[in-house]
Image 1 (cartoon, helix red, strand yellow):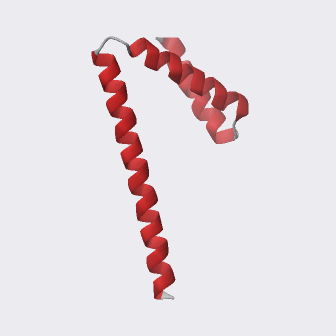
Image 2: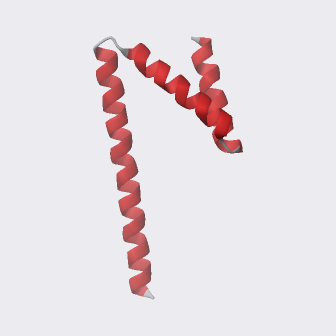
Length: 75
């Protein structure tokens, strides 16, 4: 039983670490594009992704996408 719990904990740790690394990479790309003056490309891609999530999504993703679109439209 202890071996199974160890494997589950290791799997959770690897997934969490992967998500953190992915988030850092996305953040680095956004910061780099904004510094080079191409932030509007990031905003355009984010609007597209939010619209796709809203059209396709579950209730939670639709709520998140709707809020993201509202924030983009306020700018």
